[in-house]
Length: 92
Image (cartoon, rainbow, N blue to C red):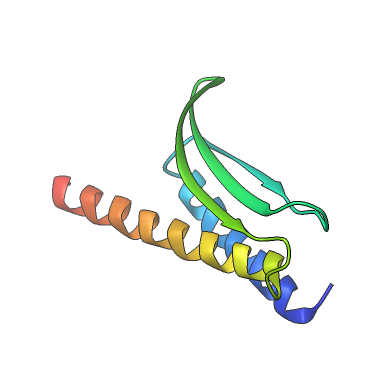
């Protein structure tokens, strides 16, 4: 695993864990040499899957596909987190 991929994964999970403090979430990832890769984050109500919060995909032949997917997902999660914090700040 390259250093850039390791950093991208760490950035994603740091943002994801922070967002989990505010929402009941579960992530699903899939990467393969033969198929396109993706990251999905679903919100849950109890143990019931509610709605898709984030989905990023990359084509299998894209350069640094897994790294790019984690970077895109991390940015989306950070945006959702900023919006959520801003809404709480306005409400409180």
